Length: 340
Image (cartoon, rainbow, N blue to C red; front, side):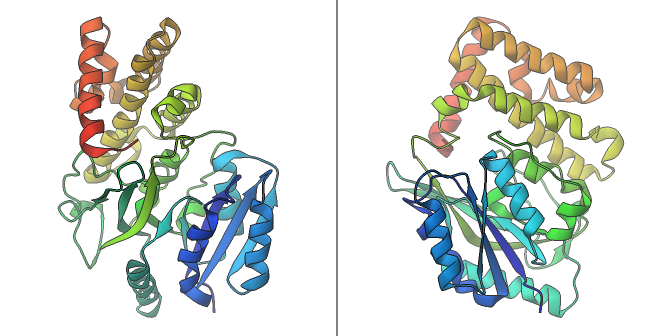
């Protein structure tokens, strides 16, 4: 029988922590396949991956490839996936054992009852290494729980309730139908992974369980503020690809989905603007203005809508005072939500 769920685990020089991730996935047994993508690692990652395949040949598979970045590793996992559903678990993260059982039982019930669910959404938990605290992101106020629904049933998402890679399990066919192919050698492509397929999703199920554990606080993580500034051109590239992807007013008919996608796109562009402002270089301030000018020229109607919204403050921060206000708001949110 076909596997119910494919996990793709992108790994690059992950020998220090990948075992915790993979071990958390193994209890799925033969209902799942774990595709470990060794993305050109130069440490012991490839050897560890091969050892898992040797010990668990009915569960684990490995792809050894030249380095293609996170997007290239996810692409390889998607292309090789044989499961009905597909999820990415980064090699420094893991899943909760009790929630895992709930997730698998739910997915199997879709198959048994022949429910064509395109997207399963679960909660995720920030695990902060620096102070040992954790914080769960849940969607119980925004989504109905325990039943299949469409976008028209979605309610207002709060600022911290964006649907991220950590919270989604897509039907594999949805990812293939939308033609998703992530850019290689580019960080922050997880934003494309959760944004591009959404208009192809017709049916959703929200399981109110804290499934994904998102490890945060390592200095080499892509969401580290310093790394985000150093890789700002990659973030800008992702922003532009999201802008290019859809004319939301013309191509996304459901207003609930359209409103969510507006909010998410604007938030991503504003975060990029904040990083450019924080860097405080003339070159990066110019890049900020160029990003919003690109938005204005490419999607004038969309730009007009977002520029006056709270999340769109980044496009209006032209003066020193305006930029200072943006940074203050960002720092407050950073302290409250501890997202990087």
